[in-house]
Image (cartoon, rainbow, N blue to C red; front, top):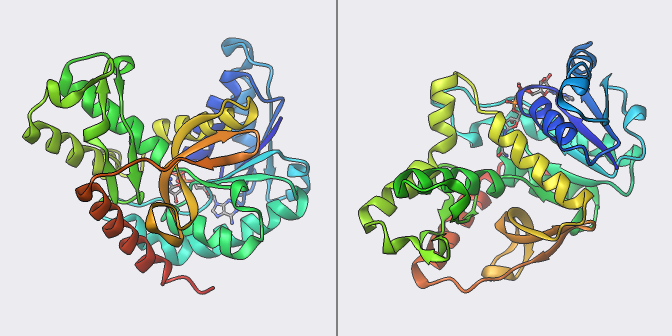
Length: 308
Ligand SMILES: NC(=O)c1ccc[n+]([C@@H]2O[C@H](COP(=O)([O-])OP(=O)(O)OC[C@H]3O[C@@H](n4cnc5c(N)ncnc54)[C@H](O)[C@@H]3O)[C@@H](O)[C@H]2O)c1
C-alpha cells in the first residue's frame, strides 16, 4: 500500500505519522510546494522509526509528482488553515485553486487512486474534486465527519464522566460550525441511549461544544488543530488499506440519498478497499431531517462560490 499525503504541514505530517505508526502501509510519500519542507518532515519522521517500531518508508518531495506514482490512496491537506475568528468557508478563494491542481496532478500519476480531501471548506473542496476530475464517486472521500464524531465522543464522555471507549456517536452534515448535525438521539453509552444519563440541556451543550470544536482549538492554538484531524484521516486510510468496511461519516457525493442531490456532505458510509463503498441511509426524525436540509443549503451556498 502506497500512500501519498499532499501538504506536509500540521495535518499532513500528523496523518503521515499516524499511518506510519500503525504500520499497515509500505510507503508514505509526503509532498509539499515549500522547498525541502516535505523532505525535512519525512527525514524527521523516519528517525522515529526505530523508536516507534514501524517499517513504513516515508519519503519527501518538493512538488515532484512522479514520486507519487502508483499511489493507492492520496490525502489532500494542501492549502491554508483558518486563523482565530475565521470560518472554514473564508478559505475557499485560495484553497479551491490549490485542491483542483493537486487532484489533477495526483490522478495523472496514479489513475486508480482513492482521494481523501481534507482541505477546507472540505465539503465544497470534495464537490470540486467530483466536478473536475472524472474519478468515480467511490474514489473521492471528504474527511470531516470522522473528526467531528471523535470530538462528539470526547464531549459526550466528558459529560457522562465515562471512558471514551464506552461511548458511541456520530456527526453528520456539513463540516462547518453551523452545518454539523451531532446525532444525540442515537448516541449511546454501552448500548444505552445517552439521554438516560444526560438532560436535554446538557445534551444540547454537548452538541454546541462539538460544533465549535475546531474553532475552540483554533482560538487556543492560533491555527487549526492537527492531532485529531491527522488521526481521523489515518483511520480512513487504514480502513481502505485493510479493507475494514468500517462506517465513518464522510463527505460523499449524493444522488438522492437523504433527499439530496448534486452535493457532497457528511453521511455514514462504509469504507473499504474500494473507497467509499456504500452510503448508509439511516432513519432520521423530522428535526434531524430539517437540520440536514439546512446544513445542505449552507454547503450549496458555498459551492456556488466555485468557478466550475
Ligand atoms: N477536514 C478537516 O476535518 C480538517 C481538519 C483540520 C484542518 N483542515 C484543513 O486542512 C488544511 C491544512 O491544514 P494545516 O493545519 O495542515 O495547514 P498548514 O499550513 O500547516 O499546511 C498546509 C501545507 O500545504 C502546503 N501547500 C500549499 N499549497 C500547496 C500546493 N499547491 N501543493 C502542495 N502543498 C501545498 C503548504 O506549504 C503547507 O505546508 C487547511 O485547509 C485546514 O483548514 C481540515
